[in-house]
Image 1 (cartoon, protein in one colour):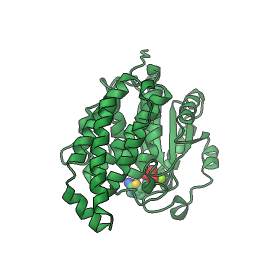
Image 2 (tube, helix red, strand yellow):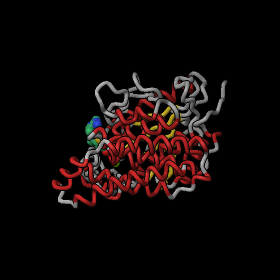
Image 3 (tube, protein in one colour):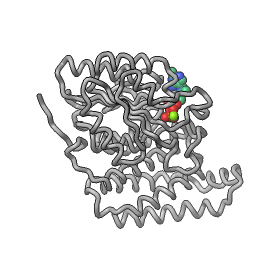
Image 4 (cartoon, helix red, strand yellow):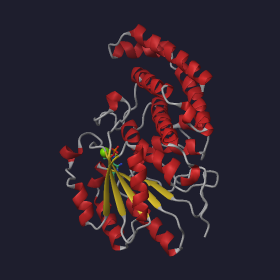
Length: 352
Ligand SMILES: Cc1ncc(C[n+]2csc(CCOP(=O)(O)OP(=O)(O)O)c2C)c(N)n1
Ligand SMILES: [Mg+2]
């Protein structure tokens, strides 16, 4: 049986510094993409970013140039609305060109609001109708067992998604069939579409529910890269039982005004919010130690800077004026922010 490990797979030896840079770039892509589209789901994309980075750039065995390689690990984004984070991970891993990311949600684009397995390289399952991804992943894991293939299946679910009955049918069958070649990860960000999970449908005690359904349960901080990687590796070693990792996260992680709220579940940043968020991300990108980072990731950073610059230039001063009046913000401050950002990006490009 082939057991190749690839660029994105676990032998690529990306350091923690690489992974942190990639996660930061993914977050920047998420705000770029949703701002350009004028719609989309930034909150749940930002909460799942570190987990996706660990999976695509450290854990999974993949061949981005050969997306149908039969022994590839499988990934299902059951909370399909977090597609921007998945697309940014796929593009950075090499499944398609980074430029395509800015076509999110456009007519004719392969990058629709929810993942489409028939059109987009690297997408294993068309998701978006919540509740179905775990059943789907269990099917893939059982097929892998029957076919004696070495692949592992990973499924990310939302915590609001726990409200769907099908999740618990899948939980029962996963334990019954001892599906140990699958790991589920719950993005426990405490919010769903329009409010806190505790107000809409209480799901606690989540850990004991999964334990009682017969799963091995690991709880982690879903933004700590070391914790995520350790948990994913541990999960793969557990035999005769599936594992669920409950990853405590922050909805909107990384963009202060999107954090701990459902407000940006399905809403893109407007022009001023975009400029605010981008400014913070550029400062954080600027402070990363690029000398410790692999060359391929510096290339990804350069492309991100180029495309971000183009996008920034496309925001007219008139649009900034209109938003500043609408949201009662200082017009000059935001016009300056755009200029400063363009200068900052040009400097960063020279240095990287
Ligand atoms: C079956 C189904 N019902 C309702 C929706 C509408 N919907 C989209 S996302 C969402 C809430 C998701 O909450 P959660 O799973 O916690 O996602 P996250 O916080 O990670 O964004 C809902 C109700 C849906 N997509 N599918
Ligand atoms: Mg949630």
